[in-house]
Length: 155
Image (cartoon, rainbow, N blue to C red; front, side, top):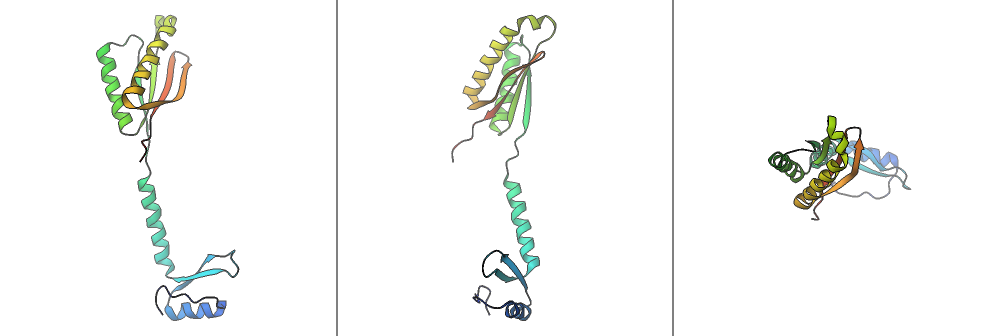
């Protein structure tokens, strides 16, 4: 009797005899089918193969992290350039980037100017890195927050 031999429709007693002769287990594959479908195999090996397959699938899953870039409304050009380079690296690596602009003291009176600057920075990031704004720009107390995600490339 070979490995892939099909026995057709047999009684449950005959199937158990065949399993005992071959020294393997009788495993029910499709219990709802009429008649139920069973397979003769070593259950330990089968379970091990399923675990291996699940572990391999888990390894291949992309792990996306959320990185944060903090800005101020009066940030200097070079400092902004440095932070944007870091954001581009995060986006190229497939991570999402959370941009936070924090206002302190008298800066709170100029939130509109800060929001305009924030929007121009985000538009530049989206064009340069090929990213998209995932969540709308929100004001939360003394902060402006949004999340930018890399755009998935077609394979």
